[in-house]
Image (cartoon, rainbow, N blue to C red; front, side, top):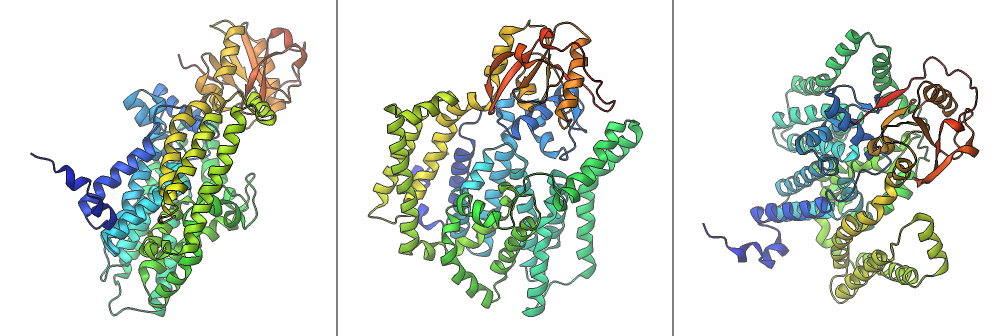
Length: 575
């Protein structure tokens, strides 16, 4: 069987984007390269990655997969679906450095191909190709694809839901199979991260468009719409019913607290009356979209005209995703608690409805100069900072010394890359500077950047210093727990409740240390340690913006108040 090399490297096919088979192969190569480069070169980083990695690790080691635990303590903040996926790959491959990033990466690749297929079906292979590439070149999407947080998986389930609904709602007679699939994956989204139901909001603009501008043939079958709810509930019940049964028969108050927390506090209460991540209503519009949705956010002023025309023409291909995006942004803006990753599920649909007009939009000089100027500024700033650091500019030397890192070579290289992108695109279409710079930036970040950041984002140096101070068979208790300490600790590790107030943790830690010899307490400066003398503690280094102290038996005060009965000691021994 001969391989036609010229076919796969035909530049005209790249430019046209109308060859479906050609698009699939090159889209797969580009997506896998961009997302998975650097896989295995770094450890899980805070805030969320060490938590999910540790939970997955304990699932495999203990065989207890249904109730997530971190360091022996139940983790009731999220359902276990995402942790299951990491645990599966850890069980399969035996390497957490590879396993913890695979679910997000795979889900992001699936999302990319779904967007390509929607663009291909509703417009052309060229539009699908542009939508998929644009999505991969958007900062937040690829950043989350390379991060072990739940949001990339949630984005995948949400996109499957939107895909199925659009396949159904934009068909003349409907496609009920895709509608039921969409509802089922909404349920999977719910048991992944509460808000997986978001695609159902697309029915709101559909109902209005159907009433205001009906077609000759509209989808019938009223009872079938309700069957979709059954599929959604079936998916939820796959986890919900076994969880309730196991809790009921466990006779364990901790399991009952887990059930109540995850069903009520982490859903309705977290949305309506949150306890952290407070941001104003306009947070996403002024702090997230202008930065993390680059370059699409720059195109919005030129896209509005095209979207307005599509609305006037009753083009449901644009109307349904566009209004759905707006509803998602409003939904998350209403809640007092906001994080930038919450709005990620809206991004694939935005890339889809941008792609049909991409050629016209990118022909605008103003947009080209805007994109080019951003890359040019990055080039100038990074080259300047990189050179200043290499030549030991005072303030930068202090910064490097404080964080124990020398990033100047990487910063200079990024600046040179940005400068090269601007120079090569100056006399051509200036948006090419983004196409050159962003993939190169991800490659540098995922290799050189990983190598520089990994020592700073893990507590290995602190734990290495601890290992020099205490015997190899010692037990280590942690007050002010961070999951990464459990994940990387070579000792049998005990903590006293992740959400337990530190003064109660201190009391419990005092009792724990007093009960047996060869036990040590690790905590940080300024922690509420009323039962220990910090002046007798041993400094063991800095990690995660905190200076850490080791408390020996000599640093324990003669007496300490009794900890409340509901404060527990949770132990984990990876051996």
